Every structure is written in C-alpha cells, then in structure tokens.
Amino acid sequence: MVKKQISSSDLSWLIHEHMRESNAYTKGITLAIIPDPHRGWRVILDRSSQKRMTGTRSKRLAAIEKNLRATYSLIDE
Image (cartoon, rainbow, N blue to C red; front, side):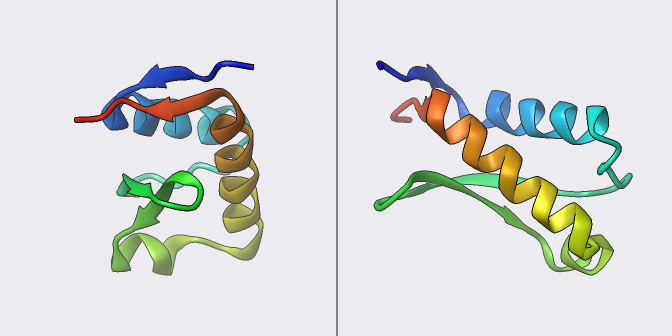
C-alpha cells in the first residue's frame, strides 16, 4: 500500500483531532513531528506537555501515532 504524503503541520493537526475525538486531549499540549530514519516520522512533546500527559493519554497518543504512521509519510521538506 502506498502511503499518502503529508506535511508535518497537517499531521500534527490530525493527531490533535484524533486526541480530541478519543477524549485523550489536554489543552495546551505542544507536539512536533520530526523525521525518524527507522520509523519515517515520530511525535515529540515539549517538557511542559510531557508533564500533562497521563499514562492513558500517552498510550492513546502512541496508538494514534502507530495508526497514522501506517497511512502517512512525511513530505520531504
């Protein structure tokens, strides 16, 4: 299956939307999408956002990341 190409900002928006839909969203979460040589891309959180993440939210974020990674690849910017 060919993956759809997407920008990091659009992918970030998709992750925020999926987190809102699953009630795992916390206001003020700042995340970035960075290229990863092994996985294609990955999500990183700033320090204050990491402090706001509970175990359940972290697991949900990891699941969302895994699902989206199967569908999307980053556009080479």
